[in-house]
Amino acid sequence: MRANESKTGAMEEEKENRSEKLRQFILSQIKEKGPIPFSQFMEWCLYHPEHGYYHSKETRIGKDGDYYTGPCVHPLFGGMVAKQLSQMAEILGRENFDVVEMGGGRGFLCQDILNWAKKKAPDFFNRLRYHLLETSPSLLKEQRERLRPYEEEGKIDWMNPVIFEKEKDRIRGCILSNELVDAFPVHQVVFDRGKLKEVYVTHHDGQLKEVMGEPSDPALLSYFESIGIRLQEGQRAEVNLRALDWMEKVGRFLEKGFVLTIDYGYLAEELYAPYRRSGTLLCYYRHQTSQNPYEHLGEQDITSHVNFTDLIKKGEEVGLRFAGLVPQYRFLIALGILQKMDSLGQDLSELDGLKMRLSLMHLIEPEAGMGEMFKVLIQRKGIDGSPLEGLRDLHSIPWPTPPSPLHFLSGQRKDNEDGRGHR
Ligand SMILES: C[S@@+](CC[C@H](N)C(=O)[O-])C[C@H]1O[C@@H](n2cnc3c(N)ncnc32)[C@H](O)[C@@H]1O
Image (cartoon, rainbow, N blue to C red):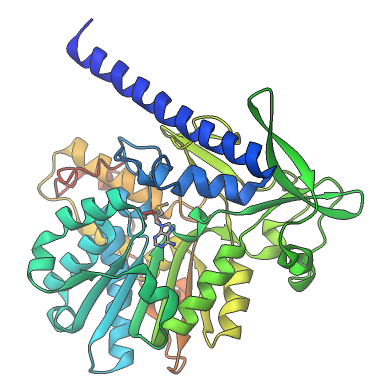
């Protein structure tokens, strides 16, 4: 057996041990307290302080992990977000501009935003103060290592989650997140013989299994009526009550400025459409998806699509005015990603140039990539309705000259050197 084969074997064993410990913990809780709502099961799988997915030292995001996110694909993603933030800062006036990034993961988005601002918009960079709020200890550690130069410059700090939970009118700037809300634990419900039932997790002969029961939270009973949705008989769906709570806190925390939320999901009518009979719960393990949350416990990501109607409606209730909701491809194109792609490409080999462009295409490809299913929601508080660049109508945008057949074969930067391992 070769050395790296035995290392891989040992790592596999370690994963299985961790998974088994989590399974034993969940079983003991069920034995003690009875069946648990699916949301509690998901909470432990992702965030159990010892065995949860986001609490282990393993790389979860990127090539060596289980899934990619926009910031892992290319620094240009963060560059375009930075461009939008700098326009928001202009709208806000001459004061300092605070960005609070929640759930920043490996810290790439923060790094790319600050790099872009430093290079392209020094005035904005001078006014910018960046605060990260991250609940995973291992990702927090990685952020600190990656972003040390900016910490030493006094540009960034880490915010205690308690401050966000408790305080009011704290931020003048923007509250930013990418793929945060889809990672909140969700309740699962089924419309069964004309009644809403909740999915609980129990066990039988040591195996985890589902049972249906009465909703554990009264908010579930009024939820669908409040958004004007009637599920079909037998239809299963997720309800992200945590997202509502989060939005309420965001509205309270922001004194003046914007909320920029990037995530995958739909408005309620589409999210709960009759053809989506099994909901949108999805698990990611080594870049493979499955709908089975009961395997690889604590070793696979579990997510569900975001209900943007919830975020918009709750936002309005807490003083956040709706500015716009657009697919990610529109946001990035409106901010000039195509022109940037066009100009990238002098120093790379033909093959690297092609690879880089193909990975970037993934961010904006409407059908197969992240372009359409991912959305950008912008809300504002205490400022007028000045048009935002990222929400512009694409008809108003000057398009780059049509590419020649050799367009994709010129390249520029070695973008694969920072460990994120692009697509
Ligand atoms: C799907 S990952 C996205 C990471 C990163 N934004 C990216 O795009 O690569 C979700 C992130 O949210 C963090 N997270 C989950 N719940 C959180 C909370 N309540 N507050 C702050 N961070 C949270 C997780 O630890 C993880 O870093």
